[in-house]
Length: 255
Ligand code: ADP
Ligand code: MG
Image (cartoon, rainbow, N blue to C red; front, side, top):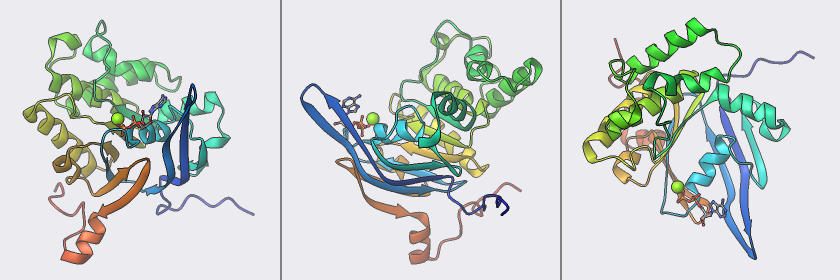
């Protein structure tokens, strides 16, 4: 028997009946129950729902920061339950980019050093290539002119752009963003949102947690959560079927 190459229509991420229970003192919190979700390459998924419904818990599991208590998570054909701590770290560093609400930049490193940091944990990237890659992603997010600044010298919106560059530096298979506009004013939030849309248009797979309904509607799919469960999904495809809209990616595609 020959191993078949993965089919391109196989979902990048597959969750099946995922559950997460937190045990604290005498309390058991069922943060997630029965979560089943597929994310395909090139998808832009928004996860939305009220505070405490399990959005961040779900994103932590997707990003291999925290294990699920039950169920299955297959990432690019690999059941993550089969990975040890080293394997998980390798997948996290190589395949996943994170963007957090609070930017999480290191205050005493420059913009350039912050973006380079996750790459320095990898042994497959030479110094010159690393420097080139850092410049390149800082250009992508429009921060190529601020490489020697420190985070404290930048606006919130600029800091989040640097955080997006850091997430992109390792050329991840998927970008996970937890309330990326949550700490930003309207104008800066809009700028970061436009940057994420641009990345999606250029092929990046994105999963964004937000409780901002207007931002969620700009994704291709909206997954609604309540009390640790997925309660509904609005997908662009369904809307398209209903309204006969053009396919995503064909709208305003670059020449
Ligand atoms: P959201 O991001 O949607 O606001 P969270 O995923 O942060 O929600 O939390 C979901 C539920 O799990 C909440 O009831 C929260 O209190 C609980 N929870 C989250 N993290 C922990 C933890 N480390 N220990 C115990 N309970 C937690
Ligand atoms: Mg949260």
